[in-house]
Length: 583
Image 1 (cartoon, one colour):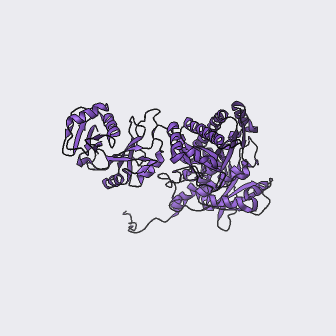
Image 2 (tube, one colour):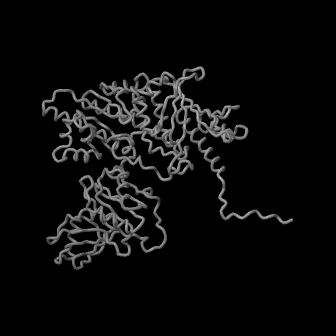
Image 3 (cartoon, rainbow, N blue to C red):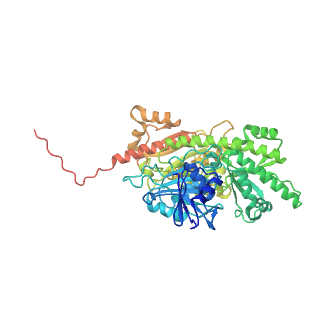
C-alpha cells in the first residue's frame, strides 16, 4: 500500500511542486508525481513512507491556495470491506475500539499498524462491503477524545475473490506487533485496562486538575501516556470526587504524582491550610491481602515509605459500593512511593484471582464468569468495561444454560452466629445480596443440625445467581472473622437430585463420585439408605472451599442434564415400524 491518491489539487500544480513537498518533508518516493485535473498520484518507497505522507500532509499542507487531501490509492474494484482508521487517541482501550467498530457490522479482523505517529492506526476488515461503507461514513471526521478520526478504504485483496473471508473471529485476529514503548493501542499491557488506579480528590480541586478548557488534564494524559476520567457528576454535592486513571503502572504513578502536585499548588494559591492526603480507592476483595496477617504488609509499606496509612471500615461498604478508601499521609514524594507499593500489592492480588477464575471458567461449563461483577472491571465506577457482554459460547456448555437457565435450589450451611452478619441491620444486607445476585435468599428456621450450631441459607436461582450469592456469603464469613486468618472458609452445601439419578452421580462402584472429588477437591457424599422425599428426590452433600463447592455443583448439574436428555422420548415422526426379520 505505497501508492497515494492526492486530492484537492490546484490546476496550477506540477510534478516539481510535489517533488519539492516530498523532499521538504523527507518522504522517500520512487517516481515523479502523476498529476491529473484536480488530483494526483504518487508512489512512495514503502508502506511506512506512505503512512508518513498521509499523516504529515493530509489536511495540513497547502499548495497554490488549496489544502491537499492525501490517502491510499485504492482501485474501485478493491474498495470493498477493508478500512484504515487513523488518528485514534493514543491511549484508547482495545475494548472501547472493538465496541465502537462493532456498531456498524461484523469485524473480522483488526490489526494495528506500526507508525511513527503519536496517535494509533488500525486496519479493519468488515464482513460485508455495506458494513465497511457505513463505518466509513459514520466514523470519518468523527471526534474521539478531542481527536478527529480519519477513515479511508485500503486495497482489499480478497474483494475480487469468491468465497468466505479468511479473517478470524470478530475482534480476535492478530492486531499486529506494536513497537515497544509506543504510546499506542497495542503497546500498553492488558493489565492497565483491568485494574486502573482510582483516586478520591476534594471537589474544590477538580477545576484545577481539569484546567482551563481541559488544558491541564490533556497535558497530564499526554505526558503520562494515560487515560484519565474525572467523575464530576457522581455523588452530586459530595465533598470528594473519584478519578480513574488507566495506564501502565508507571503511567498511573506519574499521573498520580502530577495530580498531587496540582492540588498542593492550588491549596497554596487559595490559602487552603488543611492537609491533603492521597486517597486511593481499592476493591474490598484485595484489601485483606493488602493489610496482611496482623497488618504486617501495611506496616512494612508505612515504614518503607515513611507514611501513615489508614483504611476505611468494612461497615461503609454496600453491594453497590464495594470499594474501601486507603488514606495515605506524608510528603508528595512519600505518598508517591506508597502508591507504587500499594498498587503493586493490589495488582498481584488481582492477577492471582483472575488466574483462579480463568481456571474455573474452563472447568465449569456454561458459566459466564465475566458477567458476574465480582472483580473491579465490573464494579461500579470502574470506567468502561466489556465485562457485561458474554463471551462467545458462554452458555453453550450445558443444555439447561440455554436462553433461560433452569433455577436451582441450594441449601448452604453457615455458623449459627453468622446469621446476623448475613441478614444485616433491618435485613438490608440480605436484601442487597438477593438483588445483586438475582436469587431468592432466605434463612431457614433454627433447628438442630448435627453437633455444631449451624443454620441453613436457602438460595434459589440459576447457575450465575448461585455463583454470585454463594461467593458473597463465603466472602462475608471470612471478612467477619468467622474463620481464622490462616483458615480457609469451607462450608457444606446440599442439593437435591431425582432418586433415579443418584446412581449416576455415584457411578459404578463409586467411580463417578470419586472422580468428582479428585477433580473438584470437594467432598461429595450421597448418603445411602435415604428415603426419597415427596418429590422423589434425595440429598447430595458437598463440602469444601468456594471454588471446590461451585465446581462440584456444576458437574453434578451436568450429570443431571445428561440423564434428563437421555430420558426424553426420541422423535417418532417418519419412523418406520420395525420389520420382522426373515428366517
